[in-house]
Image (cartoon, rainbow, N blue to C red; front, side, top):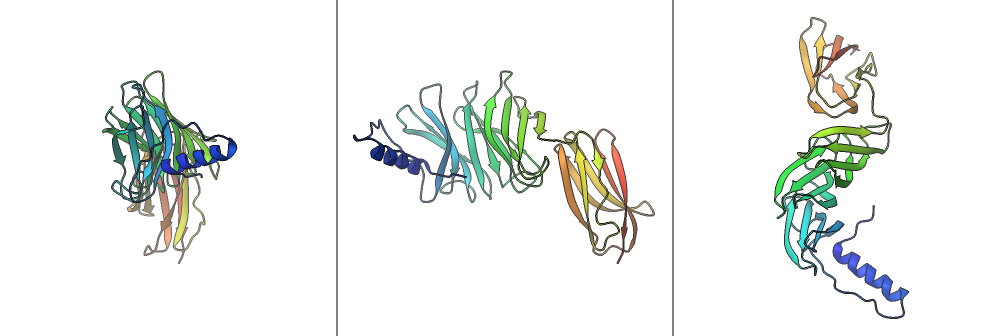
Length: 280
């Protein structure tokens, strides 16, 4: 992935032009933004007032390791205001667009929030860059939002890639949202078409076994383990999950040898059970 700062980008373009042309490049102006550490610009758009809006991420300012940065300039590139968004880990803005209400929508990724290693990060601001709402999307692995656009009905469409869902490696990730950022439709290449709890493996097992399942739609999921007497002995998961394929490892250290039942249930009434045998 190419990562260059706003400052470095300007210098790089001038350098190429100087060697490609016999005359000095016709530069109207250049601007740099940032602080004592690394600051990166990934997306820019001209705004309704003739100025510019920039997003990327900054190590110089904000709350954590790196935060989403949002910079508004006038038509001459002079900074009018800037904002940062994020938490204690790396958060990055990769795409920016001015919205029909004069505010801004940012898509990127977050390591501070969400369900996994990194999740798609969507931030909606007002015209002054103040946060109105945020959303995260993704699973237990890495998910990125590379481009966002407002749709004709006032909602949003995000394109990116996912390693949480799909058939393996990186898959295309497309998310359709309403005007408040709630999911209307979520699609990843080869997304599961049915609800299923797969047989745990290994089975029988000693100490730990992998449990995998798939959801054809976003659902609230409970994954629990029961003993032969029907008593709940472990709750492995109890949260909202997006559509896709999921897996976790049940560590049965401290449990007695015997027969257990893994039970998966989602809102709407669907459930499945798989038997496992623990041998020590």
